[in-house]
Length: 149
Image (cartoon, rainbow, N blue to C red; front, side, top):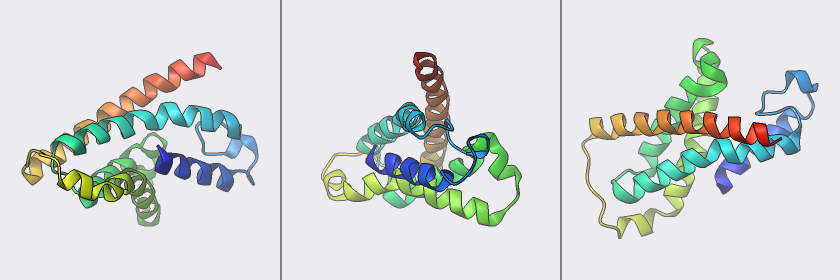
């Protein structure tokens, strides 16, 4: 969650200079955004955490899968549909990094675990499924947390 919150704190700082109606955040209010960020990021952290403990994903694979699907999901697909390679690269770096950094930090611990080896195509399919389920779960949690506001 630390790397995910770092991303969100930086997004809040970057958006503070904009009027509230133009901010690209979960909520234009910075404190509310950070509250909702837990609901958004938690499924990604949980699902990837469980997956890398069980299967032999490297931090590079998590980076690429998480970053690529981030391009598709960011702003409900608007970044992907922009056909802007600079925006794609930016989102790849942001989404890939916050998901891969914990795997990189825990690399030695993970190497000592008995993890199942998967073929590359299975890793891609499972990774895409994880991302989809996390995105749907995040939407549900945002709805629940939003009601609690």
